[in-house]
View 1 (cartoon, rainbow, N blue to C red):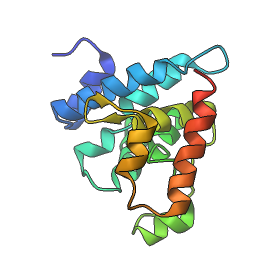
View 2 (view 1 turned 135 degrees about the horizontal axis):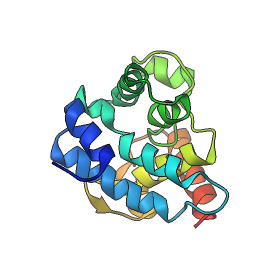
View 3 (view 1 turned 60 degrees about the horizontal axis):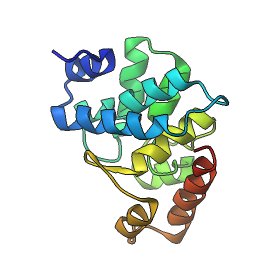
View 4 (view 1 turned 135 degrees about the vertical axis):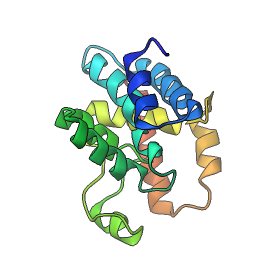
Length: 160
């Protein structure tokens, strides 16, 4: 059994070892941006829990599923929102609707939410990649989505 309590939660929710390892690497990357202006423990918790919804599905709805799981577990709202808002640079209510998700604002607002979303963008599986590589991997997304991801990266990178 893993020593990390967040890893234990992910395993008990039904996440596989690949998801848990991904979350551990995201937490490591996110720690680079956790200075005095953010709640470092919240960033760690959010980084570790952001993909708990992958215990249910690996499609785009995993973030909303993860938020639902966090609510059912009685997690703090601030942590639940990190999970809900971590996809790419976030999805607004219209984008959620177009993707068949519940129409809600899933755009990162707090620094902690932004750090987790950006760190997740920098990890493919359990491999750390550059923002440039991430941008190449999302070439098929809309220009608007790519701009949002780039702007998020530039904002968070200033913290590191």
